[in-house]
Length: 235
Image (cartoon, rainbow, N blue to C red):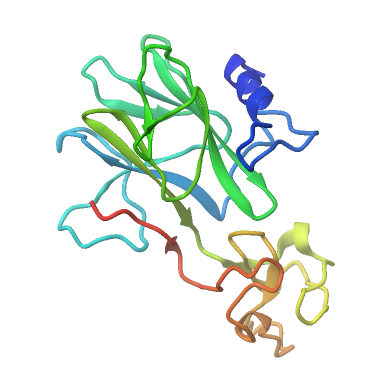
């Protein structure tokens, strides 16, 4: 475990509404699930600076793709290159200084990002308020790193219909209580990871539990089959 992981783990149990499971061992267990990843929608980058491709989803029609940083699993580092361009990666970088470290965390159905400010001289504001060295970020929060760099926290939810796979085989659907086969197509809730039957011509069982209601029966998240953002800032 690296130093950032130890510091983030030690400070997860803050009066912030998010705490760490006792078995947690960063960076392997504190990760965003594959169906739901955190993105930073960035303001302030010059047009010529490289950026991650903007994923499909609910995005404003502005004529150009927004600047989007995908937060990797484990501990991610925000740093500035020698030409002052921001970079977010899983490695702090050998020749440049890591300013801020982030770790995706999850407690029940709530997902968040724990932020560790590594540079003591860096003045960071969250939602207009000076940030503590350890801060919990949630979807919709704004992170002001400098006068020229603002980052909005968004969650991107990926494709939600796929075979149940070995991990879910034998588990019961929470609606009909019928166990899944590994090859059976299911809808996976992006919030709680509950699986529900969807139409599957190969199965011939007629089960379409995901369409029998508008919310996940486990966590009450609205059921939506398309990928994209539940929140995206208007830039």
